[in-house]
Image 1 (cartoon, helix red, strand yellow):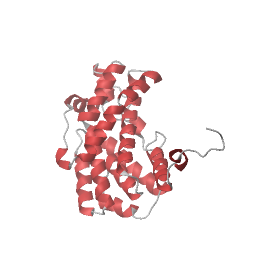
Image 2 (cartoon, helix red, strand yellow):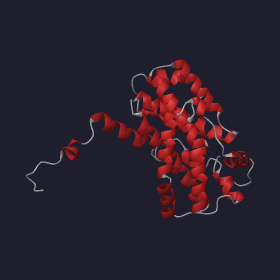
Image 3 (cartoon, helix red, strand yellow):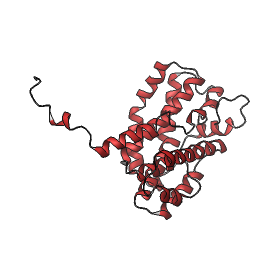
Image 4 (tube, one colour):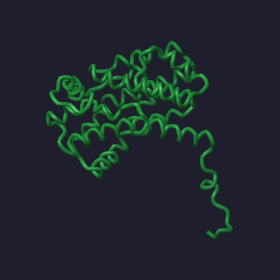
Length: 243
């Protein structure tokens, strides 16, 4: 193709303004640089390393895949989707019920601290830097117990960011933080960390698809060892992380 020929339509059209804004905001909100304090939590991974359940890249990948598919990853994704939908139609009653259930749906005190602290930070920073019409009303309807996935759902709905990409970005951020914690604890190199992230791509997509089609009746997990790790971390002698 010479320089005088027009570019293909698909290549020249790019994203529209709404798509560009949504991508920009998701990349910001769910970036490691967005100050919700995620780096200080390990979701029980620290105890799993101490106990010998996680010893290398392969065992970390298996542990995270289970957490994502059958544990908190899937449950949090369902809460995000349900909160987003309730906020989008301004159903205050449903939103409050979802927020309360999500806050209660954690297996340990430290996991409660982890998700509630990040949720509140996410809301506060979004309000300060990314204010928009209707935002305060959605937050008020959620009540005082706003955990991280509910916060992401509410903020995404307030800004009319499409649910599917918000879901994928959220799960990518959660998995990335888990990997970061595991890499510091095992420890692992940067290449192994990226290999784990790459290998979990299909798991993230599958979990997002399930969560988008799920109802609150589909909530449930079967990650007993991960839940036990979260509980036992509370009394672990030496700790780098808060959970």
